[in-house]
Every structure is written in C-alpha cells, then in structure tokens.
Amino acid sequence: MKNSIVHFIGAGPGDAELITVKGARLLGEADVVVYAGSLVDRELVRTHAPNARVWDSAAMTLEETTRVLADAYATGQRGVRLHTGDPAIYGAIQEQMAELDRLGIPYAVVPGVSSAFAAAATLKQELTLPEVTQTVILTRLAGRTPVPEREKLAEIARIGATMVIYLSVGMIDRVVAELLQGAYTPATPVAVVAKASWPDEEVIEGTLADIAAKVAAAGIAKQALIIVGDVLGARKHGLGAVSKLYDKGFSHGCREGSVA
Ligand SMILES: C[S@@+](CC[C@H](N)C(=O)[O-])C[C@H]1O[C@@H](n2cnc3c(N)ncnc32)[C@H](O)[C@@H]1O
Image (tube, rainbow, N blue to C red):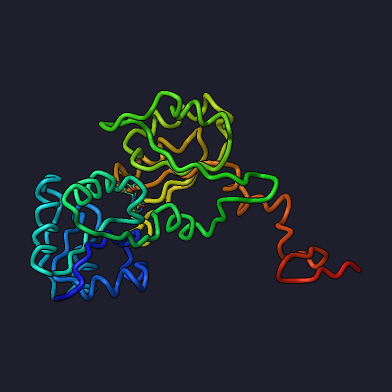
C-alpha cells in the first residue's frame, strides 16, 4: 500500500512555476487533490496533478473537505490539500489539521511562496531596508473574520514598519484612514499589487493621499495586496543607507573584511 499521508501544500501566488519542487512532486504523485478554487488556478492543478481526482473546495464545507481527504487516506490513496500562497497565512488550515488529528490521520505541510513575496518581486522591492525599517507586518482589516482589538490597523500603524495588508483592498478607504492615525503620513508611498505573478497582474502605486482614488479608478476590489511604508520610496528617491552585508570592510562568518 502507498504511503498515504495527507499533504497540505502551498501552491504559491499564481504562476504555476512558483510552487516548490517538493509541492510539485507531491501533486504529481497525488490521487486526490482538494484545492482552493477561488484563488488557485485550475490550470496549475491540471499541470502538476494530471492524473488526480480533483475537488474544488470553494463550495465545500470543512466536513466535506475532511471527508474527501479521510476517504483517500482510508483507501491508501495520496491526498493533497492545495492552498494559495503559503498555507500558514490566512489559509484556515489549523481547523483542517485539527480534524485530521481528531481522526488520527497523519499529515505534513509543504510551504509555498506567499503573495506578499510575489508582490515584492513584481515591484522589484526589498521590504526591509537599513535605516528605514527592519520589520514587516503581515496583516488585514477585520472583515467577516474579526481582528483582535489590539491589532487594529490604526494601532499597529504606530510602528511605521513595512506593512503588507491582505484581504482588504475592497476597504481601501478604511485602510488609508486607519494608517493615517499611525506613523504614516499622506505622503507615505503605497503600492497595490493585484494578481501578483498571474499574466494579468496589475500594479497601482501612489501615496496614502491618492491610492484609494487610483484603486477605485482601476476597479480593483479583490485578490490584491496593499503594501505601505517608506521602503517603497527607495526606487524613486534612492537608498539612504546600504546593507553592510556586501561592504568590503564588513567581516562575517563567510568573509573576512578588508579595511583599506
Ligand atoms: C485567503 S488569503 C490567502 C493568502 C495566501 N495564503 C498567501 O500566502 O498569499 C487571500 C488574499 O491573499 C492575497 N492574495 C492571494 N494571492 C494573491 C496574488 N497573486 N496577488 C495579490 N494578492 C494575493 C489577497 O489579499 C487575497 O485577498
């Protein structure tokens, strides 16, 4: 009998080549795939799992997705639960893993490229820059899923770090209003990246003063990330400081510095 452990796999942000080698291999070996059809491209599933029976979880309940994976396990088939980006970020996998624990079904998680990093790649933008910020906050506005009071955007905006805001582009007016209550100003640069890594990806750049109007004009209401912070100014206004890592006078574990 095959080793039928269930795998939760990060499909990456969209581009079928942005899944990990391990994720692609496991999909290729899968008999049953349950994938998040609202965000994962059906074509990606077809490419990597041509022989699997495929279920779109968009219209399924937790009980139903668990049943499909449990049945696969019970019959010695290889089951994969495929999530967009990285499954650990807004993937609702904890409850699925708890169900498998309850049923005594073994599983493993294979990480993926979260859309935050695809968006940074699209922008050709490092999210951490010396003397600007060394912190990235991944967050969202409360929607139907509540956000703890202490994590209100206006609260965490007081740090002034780079923020990557998921699941919120449809509420961009509220995002801007809350960010302006923190360390950001109307001049703080913002980028909205829709469908990062897909052929029809879109980038809107502006400031907190004008981004909401630009996003409304572009008609972007979903599947987009809002990235905000002073790091975004570096491509326009240059770098204030550079990393010491490649400085010729800077020694580290892999290189002796040569101070002239
Ligand atoms: C339910 S969350 C899943 C996030 C996913 N686990 C990840 O790591 O990217 C869905 C949200 O992720 C963001 N998202 C997912 N894929 C995206 C993409 N290719 N481009 C931009 N944003 C994306 C959007 O904010 C979307 O509303």
